[in-house]
Amino acid sequence: MADQKRPLQPGNTAPAFELATANFDGTVSLADLSGRAFLIGFFRGLHCPFCRRQLEQLAGIEPSLSAAGVETVAVINTPVERARLYFRHRPTPVTLLCDPDCRTHRAYGVPHAEFLPDGSSERPEWPYRATMAQFQAARINPTGEFSEPLQPMEANTVLNAKDRFALDQADHAIFAKHATQLVGHFLVDANGIIAWAQMEELDGPSSLCIFPTATEIIAAVGELGR
Image (cartoon, rainbow, N blue to C red; front, top):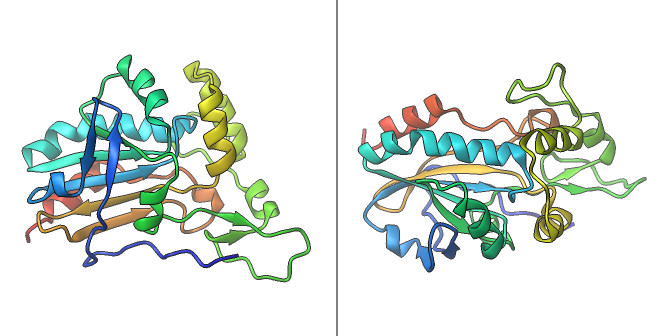
């Protein structure tokens, strides 16, 4: 398995990007954000109910971040046509960008787990290389919506049913190709330098879908320029 780029850290320069938007026609690039601080989250596709919940949280704190001079951006691993259809009925103040190939996720070093073949002598290194047994043994309840922690795939199924979210062909295709993509958040200052970063589940698969809270994000924003 090829080594993955490690997540970018505070002090690194934010890589350039230009992606189609789900909020409106056109694209948004790093150059368009030049001179402004921004929070950017890299997510799985709409098939992930926990990612949808985090997007709602970001929408809730967007006014506070905007008042602090910080733009809120989210990159979702969903084709733009599908994303535009979904968010047409669920408008959001977050600038939504679409990257169905996860190229920007890779550029920022957001990990994607790869499963070792059965019987492999290669040593697991979470979150880059894992055994299927590790993943199957994981139990999660990050939002407290379950009576007891569930296996991650079961958790997704339960919440999608609760949300009445039916995966379409595009969602199934993205899930099949990028099911093990992880989530990362980065706060970038007005000079294009990463000031804060947080990755999903670096501690192990049972920390899947634990994302930064509104309080943590606002606190990070409060440290900008200090």
